[in-house]
Length: 148
Image 1 (cartoon, one colour):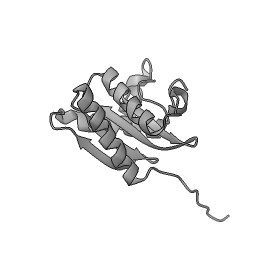
Image 2 (cartoon, one colour):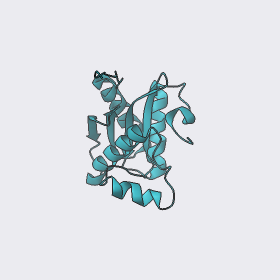
Image 3 (cartoon, rainbow, N blue to C red):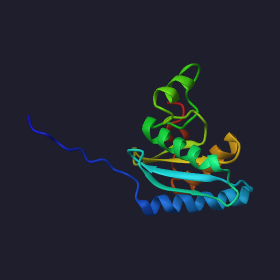
Image 4 (tube, rainbow, N blue to C red):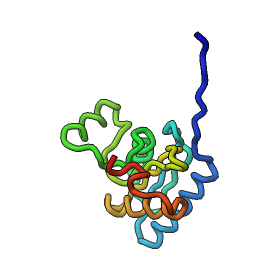
């Protein structure tokens, strides 16, 4: 038996920075001091950034949201009942159920994850959705992983 490789598409660093810039613009417009994280397809950190008045913990929360979305290929917040506690605990805190994380899907392939934290969960999800829609207007909730 021979070994084989599999090509895995991931988001470019320049795209991660563009997403972060757009998130800052939207956060500023909404008067919400946010942190943003963008990760690649394997949940590796591409960029993290926090607005001046963002809370300290929002940086870590945004990263967990982005990593969860990339890993599960679903928007965060889908876990219910005991699963919402058990999965984060079993993963050593690597997964979160807090809304505001979305997979980044291009041509049907998840190439990364986006996480926003710092506002209410509704504001975080609204900002993340607006950021993705600015770059991927054809993306629907189902394509991002919601309701799967």
